[in-house]
Amino acid sequence: SENEGKILNQTQMMFFLIAAAALLASAIGVASTMMATVFERRLEIALMKAIGAEDGQISRQFFLEALLIGAVGGGVGYVLGNFLAQLIGRSVFGTEIGINFLTLPVTLAISMVVALLGCLIPVRRVSSIEPAIVLKGG
Image (cartoon, rainbow, N blue to C red; front, side):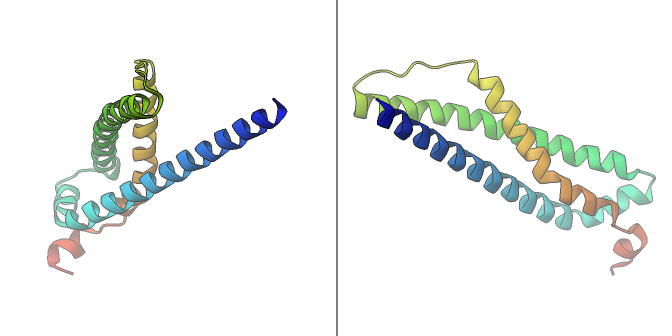
């Protein structure tokens, strides 16, 4: 019984580490995607700044995009996760796995937080864009 408890604790720790690594990889993926988006939209950002938009307004736009991406990703992940849980439950254990709808808001919240964290560095880059230089073609 004691050995089974140790194995269970080690398994839980392994799953925790895998989840942490997946969240870190997701944040890095969001950061690289958003950095590419900022780079591609330099002209648009410079134009917005030139007509009076403040860094905060432009940053909010990117944060809202990140929240939307996080919500959609979390929703898709929730659906796929439940599907895979059902598939594994039937094939390995021969039983149905109950769907817990309380995990949906948690999944959405975590995915949105990861998307926001991944967006921090690219959004800081927005404030360093100089409209005159970008619009001149430099």
